[in-house]
Image 1 (cartoon, one colour):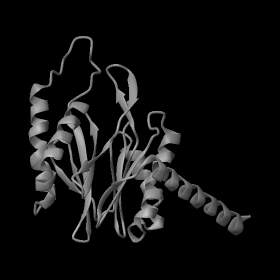
Image 2 (image 1 turned 180 degrees about the vertical axis):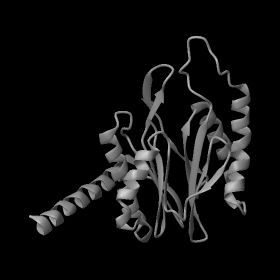
Image 3 (image 1 turned 90 degrees about the horizontal axis):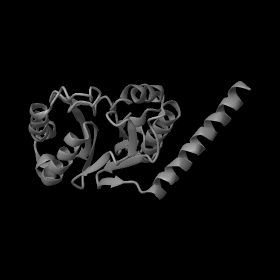
Image 4 (image 1 turned 45 degrees about the vertical axis):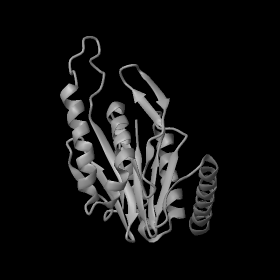
Length: 231
């Protein structure tokens, strides 16, 4: 199971992901980074066929400046991703004897950033469609996306779009930790990237541990409030 999620905050955007890759054909899982730089000002994550995402990463590394400087970032992302999808769809061998569960070449790509004081979250679907989610304020891709969306809805009363990226990092990590408890194929280490007017910052392990402490303080404060109100 894969989950990559993004949330809009008052002063930036936060992306988070798990690190577990599932290889259905071989019946195994292994860790891998799912959030990648898109130049110095944005970041992206993907879910689906690793061969497709490998090509997307190479393409984005080579063309990040052109993408981020384009008048329409969604169209610019689409122009880069579509040829990769078409290539893999055209060369995909659907019926391999003895490997009926080998997967497909489909992949989702989600990128996010902060430009001219405004957030953007854009998804490119396996059919090449563009989705814009900054106005919604929260989006997730991957096989764990439905659970992430539900977790995001359960935290909507915290009004993430009105709070700082520090709180956004804690909220994203809390969603990932909740998914870790409910799914055996979502697990640590988690990746978190915050993006603001100064660019994208991918949190180190030490910084993620600091965010974890914020989450624990948050949870303790909730328990204290519940005890005060209801007990």
